[in-house]
Image (cartoon, rainbow, N blue to C red; front, side):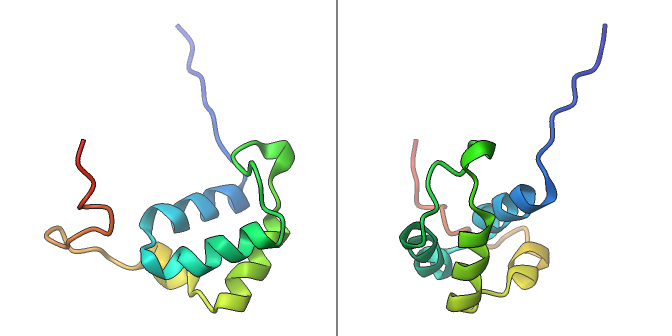
Length: 84
C-alpha cells in the first residue's frame, strides 16, 4: 500500500486559505480579480496570481490577518446561514 500526496503551490494555497476564512469583505476583491482576468483559477494552467495580487492590493485586504487570525470556537461563521 502506497501513500499519495497531493499539494498546491504556496500561492494557490494562500488564496484558498483567504477565500475559506474570508467573509463579505472579500466581495470587492473577488469581483476585482475577475475584472482583471482571473478565470478558471482552480485549474493551475489558468491560475492568474497576478490578478489576485493586484485585486488584493487595490482593495486593501489584509491577507495575513484574515489567514492567521484566531476564530473563536463559538464564532458565527460567514457561511453559517447556508443550509443543506
